[in-house]
Each structure stands twice: as C-alpha cells, then as structure tokens.
Length: 280
Length: 285
Image (cartoon, rainbow over all chains, first blue to last red):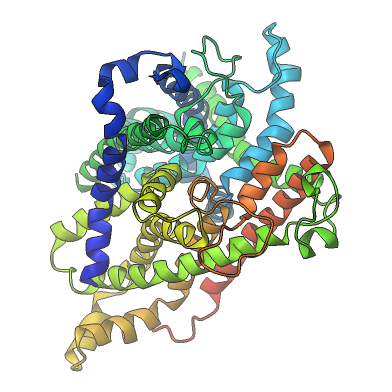
C-alpha cells in the first residue's frame, strides 16, 4: 500500500525530471528565450523555434473553449435547474460515453464530418477557400471532446450551491432566470472558471484527434481558416525521425516538457480554486 | 419592461434546451457516422487475418494483429495497474481516513496526474525505454499505459470506497478484524460492482489511447509472441491506414474505427451492467 502511494506521489516529479534531463542537451546550447519565442523550425540546421507550435496550440485551445464553454454552461444550468430527474439520468451515460470515446475515433469523425463541413459550407460562407484541414476544424472536434469533462465538473459545481440561496431569492420575488443569473452563476463563478481551466488543460494536451484534422503546416497561423501545427502534433509526428539527431530528440522532449508544465499549471490553478470553492 | 424578464428567460431556456440536444446529437452523430462508413467495409476477413504482403497498397489481409495487440497491451496494463490502484484506494479510505489533509493531498496529486496528456506519458515512457536500452516493444507499451491508467483507476475506486458508510467500518473493527481484513473482506466485497466499473473504465481508456503508445510499442504486421517484440494497436492501425493515400486502405481505417467503437461501447455497456449485477453481497443501510 505504501509502495503504491509512493508511486503516485512521486510520479509527477519523476515525469517532470525525466523530461527535463532529456531536454538539457538543447537547453545547454540555446537559450530558453530563443526556443520559446522564435518561430524558425529547421531541425536539420539546428533551429528549434517553438513559437509557431505554441501559438497554434493556444489558438486551437482558445477556439475550442469558446465553442464548448457556453454549450456546457447552458446545458449544466438546464440539467441542474430546469430539467426533470430522468433527463439527467439519460445524460449521465451520454456524458460517460462521450468521455470514453478514444481520441482516434474523434479524429476519424472529424475527417468524415467536420472537414467537409468546414470546406464546403463554413469557409465559403466567410468567403474563404480551404481544404477543410484548418484550426477551426481542430477546434470543433476538440470542443466536442472536452464537453464531457467541463460538463461533469459544472454539474458538480451547481449542485454544491446551497438550495437556501435559491429559495431565498425566489421568495423575494425573483424569477427563476433572475435567480440563476444573479445568484447561482455569481455564487458558482469561481467553480465555473476552474471547470473551464480544466477544459483548457485537457484541450492543450490532446494529440491524435487534433493532429488528424488540423493540417500540420509549419508556420504561424493568422486566421481560423488556416492550417495549424499544435505542440502535441509536433511530438507525435516526428517521433520516427527524432532518433537521427540528438538535438532533435532533445527538442521534442523539451516540447513535451513545455506541454507538461503548461497543463500542470492550468490544472493546479483550477484544482486549487475548486477545492477552495467547495470548502467555502 | 415587465414582460422583458419573461422573454429573456424564454430565450435562454430555449438555448439551454438546444445545447443539451446538441450534446446528445453530437454523440449520436459520431457513432452513426463511424458505423455508417465502417460497417459496409467491415468483413470477416478483416477481423480474422493478419496483413498480408501489400496490405497497405490495398491487397488482402486484415487487422487481427492490431486487435490482438491492443488486447494484450491493455489487459496486461489493466492487470498491473490493478495491483497498484486497489491497495492504494483501500489505503486511502481505511488507514488515511483520519488524516484529512493527507488524503486531500493525495487526491490532489491523483487529479493532477489524471490531467497529464497521454503524449507526455508517451514521451516519458520513451525516455525510460532509452534509459534501459530497450527498443519499441510490448513491455515498454505496457509500462507506459499502466502509468497512464493508474490515476484514472485509483480515482474511480476512491469515489466508490468513499460511499462505504462509516458504520460498516466501525462494525468490522469492533468485531475484532484487523484493518487489512476490513479492507479486503468488507470494503472490497461491499464495493465489488464499483471496483469492476473502475477497472473497465481504465481498460477502455487503455485500449483507446494512441498517443501514449505511439513511441513505445512500435508497429508490426505480426501478432507478438514475446514481451520484447513490437506490437500493433487498434488506434494506431486506424491512424496509419487513414494516412495512406489509397482509398481502399482508408476505407479499412473506417472499418477498424467501427471495430474500436464497438469495443468501447461494449465496455461501457458492461460497466453499466456490472453495477447492477454483483449486488447480492452488498449490505444496505
């Protein structure tokens, strides 16, 4: 039992240190600043600028949160405040299955449904011509993937708000919606923000599904109808070649470290906010 | 002006209803589109043969190597993870029950690990693999997937053990059983269905994940016969076949995706059923 405990407690540190040791080779040669804030990616001539990948990741994540966030919020309010008990009973397996579908399947779905949707309908609507493999496509697929995670936490958050508050507000003559807007959402605001934070950390690290639909072109994206190349996709796409040059491998491991650190920070902040919220 | 608040409420109620419907339809759409594309291509040949020469150019063969590989990988990883997760989850709920701060800290760590992307586990598995001088192999994949699913499994089990009433715990102790007897005889028996659900959940995550095994298991056309051989997995088979420019191979990727979807749905239905069965040993309060 103690051994099992030790494994779990030390694993995050071991993960971080292992990845750091692997990336020291690159870090000794080039400054952190140069790796993170330049965008030239030419492994063969020793240029490892990650800016383009980081920006792609940020854009896909932000877009997917823009889509998933409101949908989750509205659904969570609907399920906890308005809907009958049996609706929640139907929604639970739906959420569970959505969370359990492998990311490869989401990727296949993206290629079958979302890519044509973007290239035939969405992009022409805005007067753009694309193949459909764009940042927006990645974001749409990603938003469906993170919905179950955000929704689950939001439902918990809304449930943990004491009913006395709602009752008091209703007794003062507020309508149901006014109560939700001014009491429930306000009271649950920290919880809502941290649920979104957890969604962000999920979205930031998602690999295969995004990789399959986002286009993977090395340049800084300037619009949502442009192809992108997020960080996880970079790692996954180049694992075959990374054995050839030691620095290349080091650069990819450094990307994994960046991913790990960013996700950890988001996770940490959100979890702390949630635990504060729940004990209050 | 007085009417406005009711109109606003109506608008938002409609929006809420639509977003709920949106979520249900997107799930239905995902499953429908995968099965719609995949089932017509799926044949007995595909699930019973290994790839023959020229399979990736549209010649004959199937993906049984990937199906069997996936099962080897996730069954052994689930088994290994069980040996870490079950004791830990019991330990947390029996020995550490009194130390609220410690137990919250552990839950916190588990949540953090749960959020680490699988590609990071993949990269970490790769560094470990290099450190020990291993090549891409089944054993490296099992190790990586085990690490990846431990937090999922412990967290799910912990949720189950949390629901055991304190009265039961106290009764077991007062009858003179030791703490580990309480753990394995009372808690485990009481929570049997939940534990099975947790294991199935972790198994489902293990079988579906591609990013963590991308570096570590390699890919091969054969069914592995030893732990040190590379292994094909279903998600990777789908991924590689979709990357092919030949339409016939791509269609097979859809078929493989249908197979994987079928497994995942079967696992989640099993998990639901198992919480109904195995209830007979349970003491109700």
